[in-house]
Amino acid sequence: MPFKGTFTMFFNKKSEELVKRHISSGLKEIKEELDEHLTSVNQNTNEIQTNYEYLCELDSKIEKLKERIDEITMFLGISHPKADYKISPLTKNEKEVFLILYTKGEEKGYLTYKEIARSLALSEDLVMNYITNLIEKGIPIIKKYANNKVSIKLDSNFKSIQAKENIVKIDEAISAKLSH
View (cartoon, rainbow, N blue to C red):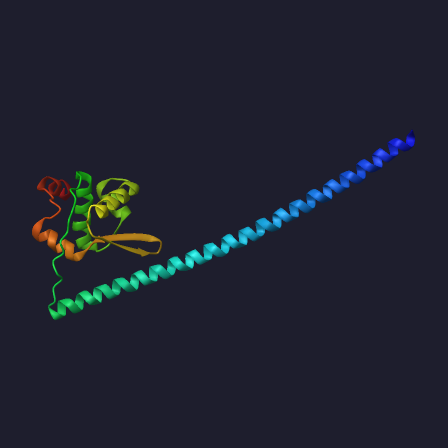
């Protein structure tokens, strides 16, 4: 009988070693796959960042071209054709965001969501939602991306038409509220 116990003990040690090697081998394979996956994710992240920087650069160049084209058309005396803006009615809050874009944009050009939010004592997320609503309702807003920040302004042609015709229908009560 002592032979049987020794065999079992020997077999258990052998099988235990075998199981440990098998588990160790499996864990090494998993680690290698995870390392491969991590490398792939890092490469994709770098590619996305490079594309984003390239798009920001393109946006900047397009903006400069637009400004030059505007200068040339002004120099040549060519006016923009009057656009037929179809603006859906705005809510009171949307009108307030519009007015900040209209008035403060006059001073600064482009505004960030944070600047607009601060002017109206609203959250940036709420301002982003209002800007999206304005765009959906037909307000032509120009966005500029630089240094991972979004800046916005009203289209200058639209702004001049708004000044002449009040196509957004801003009433004096809202204007007065924001001027104080």
